[in-house]
Length: 363
Length: 201
Image (tube, rainbow over all chains, first blue to last red; front, top):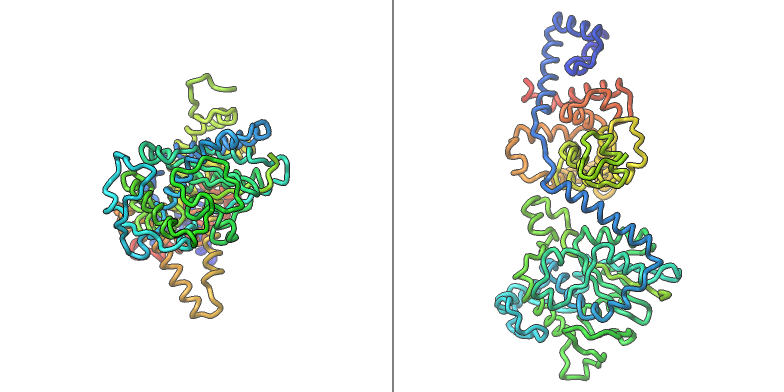
């Protein structure tokens, strides 16, 4: 009995040709003498054959390029960070440009990924002709129909609550080695660029919109940035920020009220923080620039109204572009098509944003 | 020595050397050469194509990061497979931990519920039906049975019967003796034989 078990144990190796000559001879003899062993051998052969004849899964098209692009991005970031000490603070040069650029683009990109955000109250707004920043955009589609599909959010809390995909990155720049230039270098190294609101509306390509775009604002406590980009880009950016600048990250929903207010201010969904020092050109869609008490100024619109205006304004431009818009689960349309019902497992795909604060920087 | 500009070596050792000297085209060639095998491996290990692409990409990223540590004592693809296998097993264990901590309750009823829920999730995570349409229901059953095996048994089946590695190669990838591979593979095939009884009659 023990011998038979011993032979049984060797059947798989026998099939695979992994036995010595002597062992194989012993197994052959045992099989000839024992029909049950022969039957067992045949079944094991069948099992083996099931897997050996299975279809091979091929890597998706463009896989090699994606690997090399990812490698290139990481390498680029490393290079940029190693020369950080030599660099003149980029933000000083770029303030004038940046102030009028991604302020609008940032929210535009964020808004388009909002899951069911605009459809929350189901109420379509017909007051669509509020685009004072670009009234003659030739590529604009019928705004009424677009906005009708995307009614605005009902409150600023809704807006911030939605921003679950926004990460707050805090960099305590007490160390003189850490300056806003470090952040700029990392942003630029990761392919970040500023895109003006007008270029977003008329000529920005999908590729540009998928790279990191950022805006910058000086505050009383430091410098803040809002970077928007694809999940992949921002993941790489976060990695670099964490590794190089000991950055702490939290979800916007867990951020302090002051941070939420600051971000809202930057995105122009609320009046600017009275404590902030805004030396830039005003964004193209300004409101309440002096921090006027809204409750006392009947000419001023409420926060909700302003935010709705902003939402509507951007909604006019979004449908004509091939944005990698998210479905309600956050998966892009392309991914949805590819992965079918598994797309719900990737809630963080698509465009996201990081709100980066450099506090008490020694610049 | 670096290859003359415009030429690409095709044997692994030369490609590794070129990559180490900074030639990313050489690494691109290595990726292209092994992408299907690595992707297929992690696909079979994870049981779904969505995770497989991420894991395959991570495999090549890790390999590049650690290329300086590769001494050439084993073949490059063996070393690469080892990285992929470790990543795939870690990924499965991570999923297993989440399942255990978040869903498994102390009593049998909750345990059953947890199993049902995780089975449901696993089903949802499985490739879309069209992804396996060519292989058909039979092949789906074959790989569902494989998914039921413990990692240590599953990997030897994948490396032997899907990747066609010999026992010594599998032992090298997994870092265990050949005798262990032999017994694990036999045990795995016996389990599969029972699970797929109607297909192997």
